[in-house]
Length: 233
Image (cartoon, rainbow, N blue to C red; front, side, top):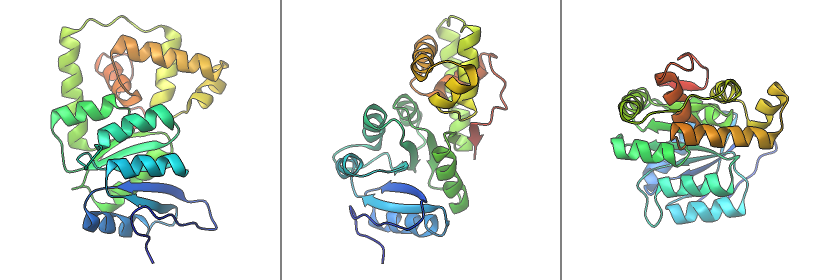
């Protein structure tokens, strides 16, 4: 029997453990049903508001947090920001009905890995969870277009100092979904050095997340547009 909000379950295997946070019980139930048809995904807990989501994240281990934007007490954007500060290895997928520009910008700045609309097909949402778990960034096709337009407009008004060759190497690997550790192994540098490069990249590109940094670099012509991390749906 499915758990109620806040309850945890366990399986003998090791599926992708998902925290599902949405303030509508019927919506949570529907999302949970099609997610758990996938053999590699387990909705390990549900939260009916952002405050409960943060509490659960502080108590249990999850691989991916699937968050609505508009939730009581604490918004999905604030939860995403909290996850990035306290549990950087947890993937964040925003699943919402909102596609307004201010929300999109705020979500990317909060460091979310994915932004998918609830109008997406169930199999697209399931795949988005898998991709976020794999370290990729996923944007709904309509969201990706809005992001590119926002970044292109921003680029017209803000001069950007070019990245170094090493910084471009780091960003290109990040775009392919490599973790900091994997990037370090690939380039024979430490995790801390990778983190430092990414911080410098974010500062130069005035980006709040890997997704925003990669898309800005693509819009500037510094990276090819066919990098594997940026799947649009």
